[in-house]
Length: 309
Image (cartoon, rainbow, N blue to C red; front, side):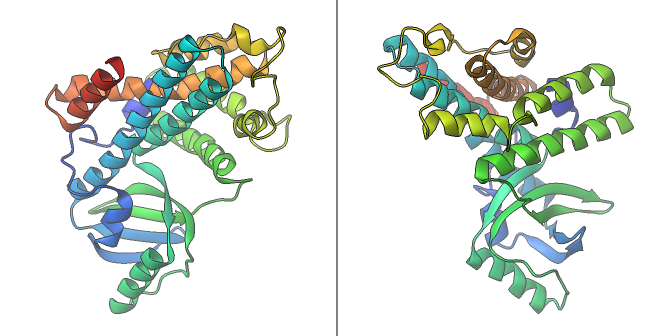
């Protein structure tokens, strides 16, 4: 899926100078000159596209770094103790954070707007006498829109789900479908191969044979219900004992291993690894593209040095 993400990457996302520390700050600082209704949501036209990319770049980098840190810590913990429960959960969060970063890199993301930020936008709309849909505080999604001469951020009320994680993975699968459609429409190379990759990961994440999203359900079963015999003292027959927590740095390798997966725990670990490894690949792509002195390269290099110490 690396080619699909690179195809849709925001220009300069890995090299943007960070004027704003998040999309939330970009909104709170009113870095848009108009607000209007679009597709049932709010379209904020940016004063500067570079500023907007800068805000998204910060979110991209913080999620990417937390993904890599979580992946490395899961390996370190497993190597130094017989415990597998927390290494498994850290592997999941590595994939969860990595998936956020992947979406950010193509101009998509999740956003929580509190009452103050919502009121800020409502007041701005009233000041400019522009009718906009009524919105309330809560979870939203956003995407960068290039609407002809205008560029900005489209904010949409987040679709439902059985909790934050369930809803996120549902939306991510939908985003992948949209990105694939656009890839095909724009004549991207080898669409059949990428279709197979997207279909495989969507199937593994959702698994409609069970209620809710399989990946987040399994995380809940490990974390809250203590299923799968993961927590010490576990039995000698525990499947956790056979899991490898060594990082997988190529997403294609993790996807390939899913073809022969035999159990829920191995699948849970590999699906998580797919997203964390893809995230790392995307960051390395930007590091190589923009050079060692780019913002993302400096932060990524420092992170690796700290974890290697």
